[in-house]
Image (tube, rainbow, N blue to C red):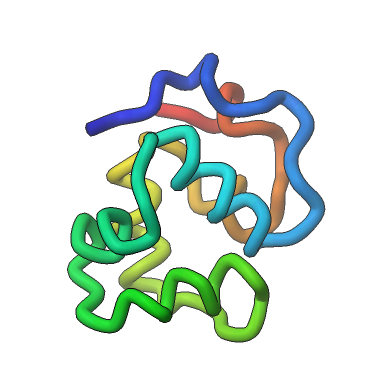
Length: 87
């Protein structure tokens, strides 16, 4: 499932965790479903990513980019917006 670029807010949330949370919500997925889509066995990892208690690995970040069709720069740095950074 891909999020349409226009569905991602123009204003980037200030933290990587809030961008990940917003992205998951735009995809219409629960934390459990998002974890499964990313191949993460421990679903509590998603909560930790979203609250900033843990940072996702590069491998997981790349999977997020592919799943939502946004750039790594947008997820990690908040540069531009999901709409501008989408493929």
